[in-house]
Length: 223
Image (cartoon, rainbow, N blue to C red; front, side, top):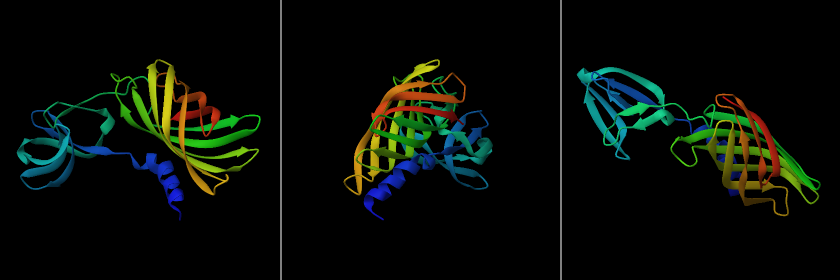
């Protein structure tokens, strides 16, 4: 398997590999700790958590633990309390309707075109940021033109901003193309466009310009 082909496989399937849940420890003082529980003995809980931006391994007495759950917390819901291992939970902002999205994309121009399937996984969500939501997107598709035709794969980051139903979308990453002058080749990939999604609706409509699609429209679904 060539290096370029391996890169293509990794960038397309990377959204599926990113999902992560955290364990939950609730203390008798009703503090919540988002962590990875390493082990539990008769009198001690050993766990790994983030403290001041760094991962630390620490412990808490079992007598001070009211409850614990494995793989219980979606890390995107976590707002950490500065200087502690504690956190508060929050909900998604209104730029999205779910953590995962899938959609089909079509591009048809006079001398070229493409079709593709796209899968997105949310990696960032913060209502206070300029780009409120960021997805990692994997694409597998086929393109055709007067000079070449073949499959392609892309991996990009898609940044979303705006509120309500109407959003601006900016994407960037890498594309691996087959069937051109060279057997396999890497190119920059990106897009700039419009995304329509009513708050908490599952329907997605996208339209814009980019590479390798050039001019595209997409229809899909959050889940």
